Image (cartoon, rainbow, N blue to C red; front, side, top):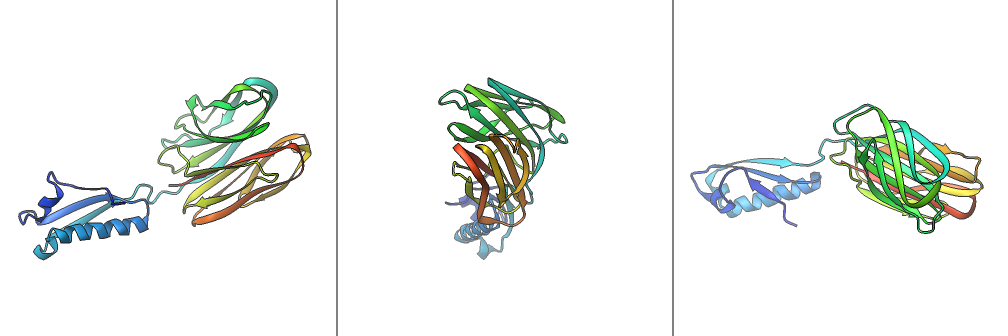
Length: 276
């Protein structure tokens, strides 16, 4: 589609060929270098159509690229689990890391359903309502949520369900460099060894979480991401998380959490990418 641009003047584009305005400043947006070059070409063609090139006008390009120069990284902070049955869970005193004006916190959660059709209804981080990116599974589930939480070095993560759940767990990450608390992409998998193919932009981060059931569950390891934690590895319901920061783009990164000795409930995995 055509780029969205605006003249830094009070007149419309056709007036740019007025000989009394020998200089034009153009401003358009582009999400990366490739799009910036396309926008630059559009501006040149528009100026040529107005005949500015024949009048020797000077043109200043102001290509504002949202996210340009930003690097998104994630840091694993803390985790808790509660082995009880309830309709809501409060994980208290979790580390939030250093307070920052642009800090985002990502909560990766897992639980076992006690009510048929149970789902995660809401999640708050430090009292801030988080955006639930999605959830995977039916009998046992996992989810990823994100919120902008600029203040406080510690606090609570609160989960509220539509029904009841047990053995709930939360892993908490700090994500730096985001323009807003949104994910670039989100994937789920309920395979015996949950897997996803992720589109990784440059200078981005990816986070995964898996809930699994077995007697006991055996986690063979993660590929594509680095394992950060593995909760209750000798019991029948277990959680694990992994993440990685990237400088180079990879449009087809394969990520897998490999398990053996799974039970009938299997596994449920969620994967999210956060980019500039």
